[in-house]
Length: 139
Image (cartoon, rainbow, N blue to C red; front, side):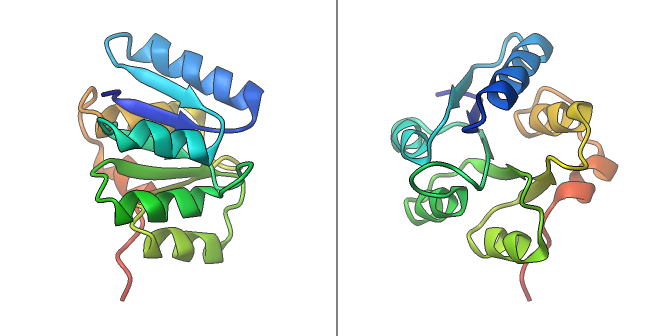
């Protein structure tokens, strides 16, 4: 089982975030893949604690990945990490059981790293940070 599964098709962003996660959490097991299909393969075995998931992926979208993970009862915390930060995407993510939604357009790298660390138990929870990115339940 890995602690963090990073699902991102942009090679530069994926490598930068992966290297930053590894540097900040050297004891954590971190895996990075570039497609939704690869993410589903990884989560079909021993699921990760946290999934950082882009929406725009080749093949199946991150929203479809989240939906399939939830239909298979994958217990990982899912964090959408995307440049598609429109309200309709946030609503679609919430409807698919996603707990957190982070915009690549506005979030700082240290916030992404801190939230990932909180979700895997490597950092002390910060209410301000978790509430900033938490999706509220649907009505």
